[in-house]
Length: 323
Image (cartoon, rainbow, N blue to C red):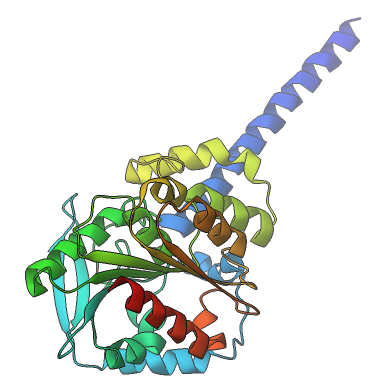
């Protein structure tokens, strides 16, 4: 009997130790992944994980063109400007004025990317169609301040601040369009749920997700092949500690339910980072006038490269109808 009790106690102790070890491992993994998702500064070992997280493969046939376009945009005539966010963080933008402008674009780039990389290819199209462009640098990245990225939940207010900056600079007669890629698309979609000046005439969202929680769940399950359910509540706690907002506190779907701003949704069918189904969700929920462009065969943020003519035609029709 004593031996039996001893073995029971030993088994219970081992179970407690195992559960403690599993909890510690889960916390470490979750904290590491959240650092990769949200932190400005990353150790080199985590930078090398970005490709696996995004699901984007090396050897993209458009990468050389994209790099050349980014360099061309960086060398173009522009003015570096700054504003202060609602929480005191300094935000940097690049103002490209156009003579006889018909409209202004406020362009929000994606996760761990840059304004020149994401918009270099389309910059000429905007310029030839007489668009002023404010290329914003998202918080927690590049020259803008902040230690963390907010996955659109914080950046939506930055976007509205840039609208006010544009209106102070140009007046309110020109129509303003909010444009974004990936996390930038989520940013402008979430911004569409805020009270905006009347001259904000539309949103163009390319490859946008529905929420921080949804995109993290997708990436962890499909790209990293981990079980997200073990980490869900911990993810929310870490997110709230970093940016004082939880992963479900605001979503693009919340914004779509109330927005009155016309929206053009764009997505590629072969996106391995943000699944095209998320754009379908956003489109279905959208309460305002809306358009949808789905590009067969396009991977993440590659729709403009795959179907440039159709992309430009769709955008020009959107401007024609809502300028």
